[in-house]
Image 1 (cartoon, rainbow, N blue to C red):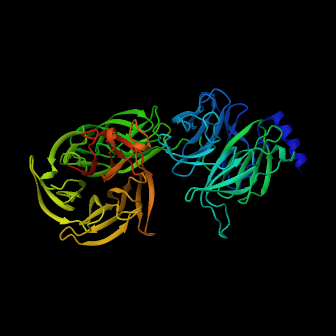
Image 2 (image 1 turned 30 degrees about the vertical axis):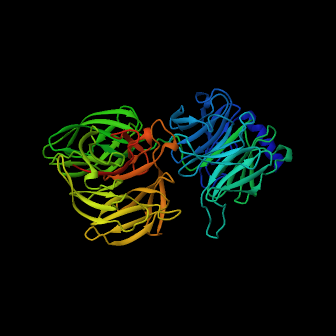
Image 3 (image 1 turned 120 degrees about the vertical axis):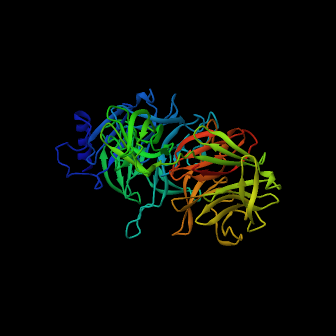
Length: 606
């Protein structure tokens, strides 16, 4: 059988790039899930797409990304492929492969600072991982990097205990009904040790998973350079010139099958059920402004993803709203001029974006038609100058400004909340009070107040929800803070829960769920009531011009469709508008840059 496969490989090299003949029958497959394999052919500097019969469906030229044959890594995030190159390029690219030519969605230098060689990359559902074989010139050991996929900044790095790592893949929980399956974690190959290793991020530890399969020509031809997992089995590429094979391995690494590849230098690969050639429908996630007055004509910005330029791109806000113009800006932004009929139905409505190919996406209840002109504002408080600001979102103009020392002489104003009529302020310092404010044009006073529930920790963010004030306190224990549910009439704490980290700051409710950010973990978390635990949903934004070291998210609020998150780190004081999935839609500088120390933020419709 092995001899016949070698003969078959030789025939394929002469006749074409398919393991099976394309006879029109789809009954013969190597993969019962009928997914796709994407791999790099270094010999031709190409990205190749194979179907479940290992028939070549598509080939893309990689020379537009890297001119030499230094193609290295490949992974898939569910929407886009990611590709890494070494050599003179030394970059990581997120690429759209839905057209004949690859389109770069984003790119950043390979870590660390284009030193060493990134051999492969992997996606874990939230973060990008890159494996570097090191550099003797720069005295860099083989290292595994956890990266922020937005800008490529390094979140964590782990020295690898093997000399020549190559392929990398992420395995999520995959146990069958009998509890069998590969343990979750990152798996990587080492061509010197000829072994596949496992790394567990939750408790940083490297373990041997299984040995690499031995090619027919013997152990000296073991050279595993590609690795992927399809939810049940591993797919491994061995590429050593005389032994270019694709292996299908079970979760223990036992060889189930071997296919001789019709490529001379196959490299990294990734498996997916997604056909990256199919254009995804547009996703609509936000609109600004998100309301309009009957009888008015206004400009709106529509945010999302997968918007495509071309004849046929259209926008609809349903009956009663005329679309005067649609302007494609990029795949994430469309500008439109609209006229709202004087008799248009009041209330919220959907936004529908249709791409030139006819695929459409619906943003549910993102725009509101009103009889009253609504001018949304953000209220910010900063503790350096003890100042409360009212900022008109449309042009970020400061339309109100108050000295909080008049109501909180002990300083340290922290959180802001809105009960539908009044602004509430939480002051830590020596006051340790939550107060409802009376705000006139040039006056600030306290209507009523309640004390904080404890004398320990620092009182931080607050939010009003269903008649109660929720307060987050940081530093109550060596590793956690706490959130209290407080009766605003008498200050009684009626409930509490532990926060996910030591330094929680902002707190808000969105669609009935409790969200909190934390500066010690740089993440936004949502509380899973059913399982009584916090789940990380996305990383806090990295400020423009900065790195992850400049992240210090403080206040957080919700406008009915998106989050607003304040960042306060010296010259990187910004306010970010962020989608529910963590995509930064817009940002602006805080009223003061430097030692401003923005703490609290709250959104109001008017």
